[in-house]
Length: 376
Ligand code: BGC
Image (cartoon, rainbow, N blue to C red; front, side, top):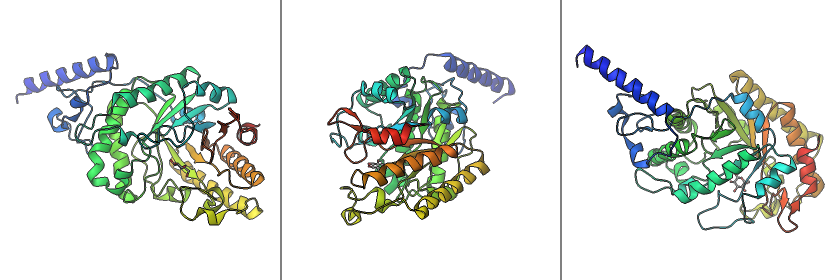
C-alpha cells in the first residue's frame, strides 16, 4: 500500500472511531461482534474477537471515566441479591424478587447492590453466543431502578460452571458474553462496576485464570475504556489466594475476595454442602477466632497496598443455623474489620432462609443483622 493510501485509511479509521464514540449507545447486534481483529488491523494479544462492526470500529463506546477508589467507596455497604438471578434457569431458590424491593434496600441504608447472574444459562451455545434479550432486560431493570435510588451496582458473571471445568473450550463464549454485557451496559454511569467472574475454580486457576481475566479486561476495554472493573483470585476468591492473583495490566481495578471462615461455622447445616450437618453447634467468638480474621484481613490489605488497588469484600455471611449471638457477632466483627481497613463490603444475602438480611415471611428486615451491618 502506498503512503498516501495508508494516510487515507488512517483518517478513515480515526473518523469512524470518533463517530462511534459520539453515537448513541444502542446495544450492538451480537452477529457484528464476531469480526476477527485481524480484519481491523489490530493484532493485540487476548483480543482475537472484538466489539466491532463490519468496518472494524467499536460500535458502542462508553464515555464513563471512573476512579476505582471512588467507585469502591460507593460499594461500602453492599447487599448481594443472592438466589435471584444466579439460580439455574427455571429454578427458584428463594423468595421472588421485584425491582420494588430495591426501595427497601436503599431505605435500610445499603449503598449498593451486587447482582450475581447466571448469564451462561441465557447465552446461546454457538457463536456468536447471543444473550437472550429477556434476561438482559431483567437485569437492566434492576440496574436502572438501583441507580434511580442512588445505589451503586456490581454486575458480574456468576456460576459459569462450564468455564471452570474447561477454560480452553469456553474461552470464546466467556469473552463473547462479556463483549455483549459491556456493550449493553456501556451507557450506564460510573457507579456501575463490572466484575469479571465470581469465584473461579476447577481448572480455572493460576495462569489459566490470570490470562482469562486479562483477556476479559481487554475485551471490556474496547467498549468501556474508563469504567472500573473488579477481579478476584482463583480457588473461590479465598483471601489466602490473593497472593496467586496476577492483576490484569490496568489501572482502573478493584480487587475482591470472599470470606466465609471458619467454613464449619458459617456453613453449618447448609443443605447445599455435603456433610454440613455434622458441623451444627460449631461456636465462634474466641480471641483466637477474632485474631485469625484480623491477621488474614491485614495480609489482604498489605497485598492491596503494594498494588495500590482498593478492596471489596464481596461476600460474607453465616447460615441461620448457627447460634444467633455468635452469628451476629461474626457479621459485626467482619464488617468492622473490613471498614477499619477501608475495604468496602457486600453481605450475602438479601432474603434466603439461609443467610437473608430480609425475612420474606414477615416482610421485614432481620433487625439483628441490620444492626450488625449498619449500626455506627
Ligand atoms: C454462591 C451461593 C452460596 C453462597 C454461600 C455464593 O457465591 O453463589 O449460591 O449460597 O456463595 O455459600
